[in-house]
Image 1 (cartoon, rainbow, N blue to C red):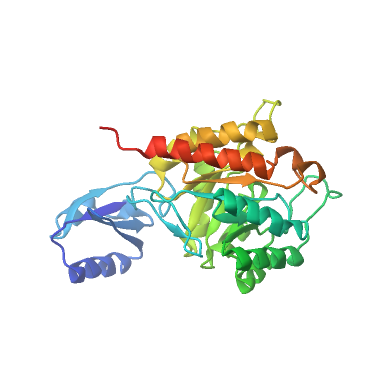
Image 2 (cartoon, rainbow, N blue to C red; image 1 turned 180 degrees about the vertical axis):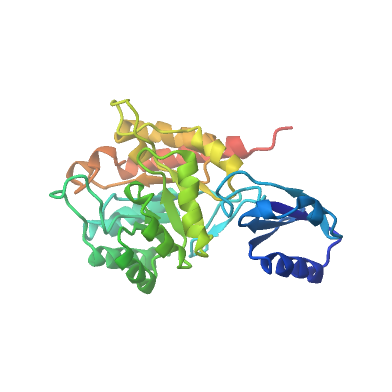
Length: 339
């Protein structure tokens, strides 16, 4: 349930109302937007008489919310959330960012790749230090040493880093090292213990859609994180598993506008994992940009044929340069004011 507060209400009146609601066993979420203030009431709101609330001097109107996700719901928070990823990089609310780098951290070639993607216009460096792989015999990542290499590159280039955390036991390590953005991969999209653990931190989270996850399941995964207090969540559409076998996954471009309608959280697109093939990455990146994504996550490697993981979907630095020029043109077209 949400209660829309009258514009004439004072701060003291608002706080009195919040205390009154919470005193009846409910939790609240106050969202102060440009045009109105909304109090989200979370709990079994069937016990609340909406006519009683509307009779109060400060309440404009009351609306029940049927969706189970509350904190991620745009009805509770009409204005877009802007996530501060550090180093002056903001995501959401009109701030478009590109996260780029190798699938996995391999060594000193990381800094070479990082320099190239930054020169091309990327604002965040991505790279996997811990790698979830289908086969237990495949390369699993460099672990903590990989995190250190990412941090070294971040310091040199003044770029926030995005890297995946896979285990509840590693979350504190990521916090202690000062990782800028923790990524929750598709395979962990419903690892509820991990979601809750990152929710207890203050570090931005890039949450990927599950392998066959619905949009509602993605939003409920975000709710797990936000329910623990961390509201710095970015959602990532990275393709879902369907009957189609010509691509690694099926990129759901519909998800971008649907998510923008349902939630205030930023929406990122990952065309690399969505397609699995270099030749398809750029067209899908363009489509996602045109559809209104708040950012992109793209894999780039200086020699994809020698990459330790997912080289088949990585762009070369030259290909990334070309993609960034075209993405800028698309962004200019879709954000331009039409007379």
